[in-house]
Image (cartoon, rainbow, N blue to C red):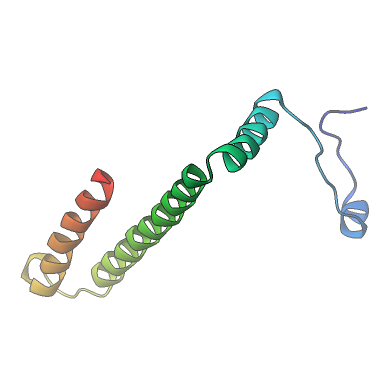
Length: 102
């Protein structure tokens, strides 16, 4: 038994390899999740809403980053003369600070 076996590409194309390694920390996290669902469903709902909010904030930060990069790459001339870009940077800094604070 190898902990990380290497298979030829021909084998990898024909089969799906699964890693069934179980760690004590992983089992502990799963058991804690099951206990919380059974005993405190309100905490589980709160956790789920926090996970969703966190994902939406990360998505918003990614969109802000993409907007800034797009505007920087399409900017012509002196960057400091582009007022729209400067306003976008200022608003994105404010939004980023708010998201980081949450």
